[in-house]
Image (tube, rainbow, N blue to C red):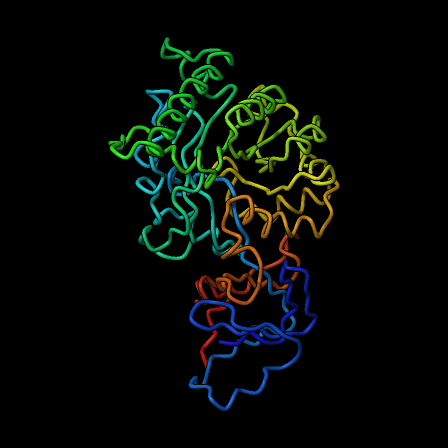
Amino acid sequence: MFIINGHIKTMAGQEYDSGYLHIRKGKIAEIGWGAIPQKPADSTEENEPVLDVKGALVMPGIIEAHCHMGITEEKKAMEGDDCNENVEPVTPFLRAIDAINTMDAAFHDAIRAGLTSAMIGPGSANVVGGQFAFLKLGGRRIDDLTVKAPAAMKIAFGENPKVNYSGQNKSPVTRMAIASILREELTKAKQYCEKRRNDSDFTPDYRYDCWVPVFDKEIPLKAHVHRTDDIFTAIRIAKEFDLNLTLDHCSEGHLIADEIAAAGYPAIVGPDLASRSKIEVQNMAFKTVGVLNRAGVMTAITTDHPVSLIQSLPICAGMAVKAGLDLEEAYKSLTIYPAKICGVDDRVGSLEVGKDADIAIFNGNPMEVFTETLYTLIDGQIVYDKEGTFTPK
């Protein structure tokens, strides 16, 4: 398939005012200027479909780096809420892929907004909530959509674990207890991983085996943090155990941007479109992502769906630009930065030869309210066509 006459933003350093993009077997095969190149004499492909986008913006599919789509379903109350197993504070062995319902209406809403993939996982009621998964958004069977699972281990600080367990009259009810419980779990997990690595007669334990990719630095701790003190505690503990970390929400990150940059961890900022519904988000603002970005922190933007709606993700980026984020950095915070933060930039996040053909096509800047998504492609297949009129020729 060829996409022609596009304004192509590759997010890999190149931009084509009028270019073409060639897709073969779900991957990007070629990108170039001008018209379709002459077909090689030895080509076996006949009558490839040609999509003329007539000057529209062609860019990588937008990526949501932190949400609960399909695990907290819309319109289904308790029956569709599988986000928090909030009866035990430490549950690292839970897997998001066992609870995500791809029939949730949010999946199609995301595709209509030009999103092609998302990091989805448990909520923040527990100190350790379980394992996130990185998914493509077009399809029904989650096993076919999974790009990386596990993709991160959820941990949480601050109000959410405190409120959940104070109501149960059990620990943790303070920030001290949250940190202590996490340190205890990480200490046991580290000992387990070391023994597993060095003992040839080792018997795997399901309760702790889920920590192996964390301590092997294949996946990060994914820390729910809003306040400055919680951000610093997450950094402190990650440094103590020499683990990778993402700072999710990071609502007061603009107050300590230089310190976060010095720590070297990325931030997934948001949901700034939501209300200030609790004390720890009283300082959240759209300026946060721009302040962090200018300080040198790799940033992504999140809706935290369903806290704010998944289809508002590009608009959230536009609001961040209005509050000071550089426009080009905003594009990166929707594409290549979340891909890198989620550990999947070898496949998605930019338009490069060999990468998955996950593509969004817009009639303008997607961060502007009136811009429309014309087409969304996942693995080279059109999963959304605004007019429904494209017929392969």
